Length: 277
Image 1 (spheres, rainbow, N blue to C red):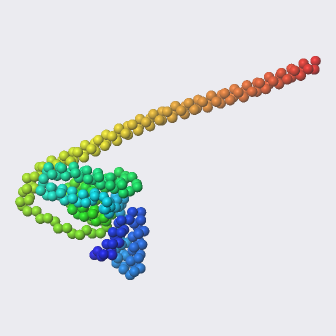
Image 2: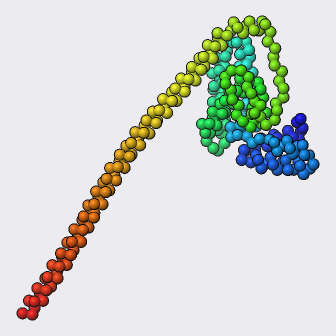
Image 3: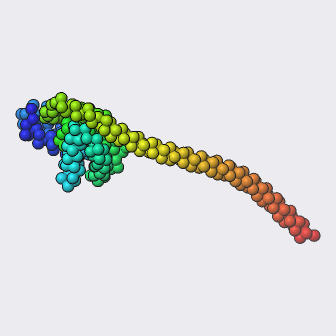
């Protein structure tokens, strides 16, 4: 069961950078144990360190200056309302709005850290924000500011957040669906499928464009590598030839020096003979 003191410490812990988490958590647990609250110490010690993506989401949630999380909560409510009524056109429009919002949230996260976001962290952030917009429990998990793992979302169905948060989330009542609502849902299913398929097609097209760019970049890198290796081979062969030329010239110079010295000696000997006659 949560207590005010436990909640206060947990909120403070998950506001810390991941690098400081373990030391801060252990210090809090030690303090609780020394004060005689062994149950609190045990619960604090069991808290898990957040991943890089989870810590960035927690940081964004606590950033009062950034409107991203309130916008996420508002869009999630509107999108789930459109889904419950199977309003295809609204879902299509809100889907585009969701993509823009997620891109904006990524920019906001990037501004909160001095480190570049890796591809893996970006993917986890996108998955987490998308899940929070689509599912009320994922939304509650994100807005709690106590994420320890990114949230995975397949695109359909409920989201399992049991391993994503540090502490259990409060139970949420599930809406009851009436036969009339079921009939309305069936009548609007075609529009929903069309909206979902169009969104999937757009994502697939974007992925194909990314793949094509990556393949072109790879080929350009291979061509540059081949050119550099050819230049290196030519330089090495030129250097070898220059070394041979240098060694040959050295030998000829040494031989010429020896010949000159011998000629000088011969001249000196001849002069000596002439001087004595």
